[in-house]
Length: 335
Image (cartoon, rainbow, N blue to C red; front, side):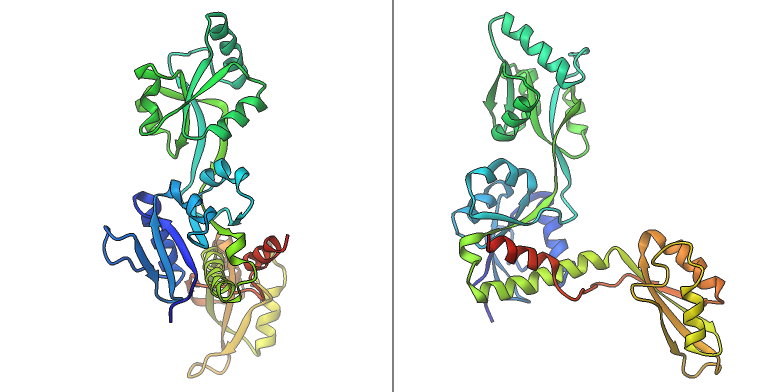
């Protein structure tokens, strides 16, 4: 059954691939008949999908062509001030990480900080012109310069490969997105020490007007957010099960909850202990769910109480007693 909920997803590049993998892992596989088509579906929930460039997805949400969208947080921060009908539902989805940075030519040996840059803009001014900054992010760039009390600059709106702007002579420095910094280095550019403007990754946004009060769309959105949230939480934990000898489940449970070196080694609310049927009368299965960062300590903890044949797996979902992301969405819609 088709829902009336519509979502815009990135149409190409790494963000497209990572988004589809992210949705598939959460049980929300995206169907796109072929790469030349710009419509698709999420069959599990009957959600209509519109594939767009990541830079255009914010606009599609803002103009109410779609209800939801996934784009970079950098795009949202750049455009969000002008559209109060667009709300950020989740600004960290865990992939697509990058930084918006200010980069200057390597040849500016003495320029390593914003203060050095400010001093250099005065030199440019004495020579009769402003420092030119090429960027696709005029709002964020202007805010950053003003926050550093730098006013002698002008923005050059550019498209395509900004890294070439200084060497081609139509800009002196750039503000652009980078993930590894390799492209900057290959174009003889360097970041300023305090030149990180924002950290960005894939985020989920929604339209306040199309969602608020629409119970059908909200019901579908809730299921989607529940799955995303539960899957994202599940990736952080591991379930460990060991065979342990003891006189009773209570005895094993007490051993697992005593003398803990690290909080949480006994599981969320405590261990689950159950009889292993077909084995010796004093053999029980003990299961604990722990943070992945504590997995080695948890294995040693199970061994200390006699655990053996320890197995582990990452749960695909961990559902809480409510969806925090959905409740936050409802709060934002009502304000």
